[in-house]
Length: 68
Image (cartoon, rainbow, N blue to C red):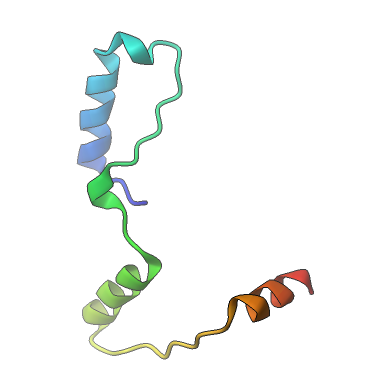
């Protein structure tokens, strides 16, 4: 989840005026700012002008590598 500075300001002002947020923790997760890791990689590839090599592994192989 990525939050733009303008969104933080907007939500902060809205929260300051909302009595439901008094003494509460506010988590900012605007639905428009949710991006997958693959989408982020595609944006980066477009910015640098080349394709990055991607290697896929199975869930089982990933979990085994985390135990080691």
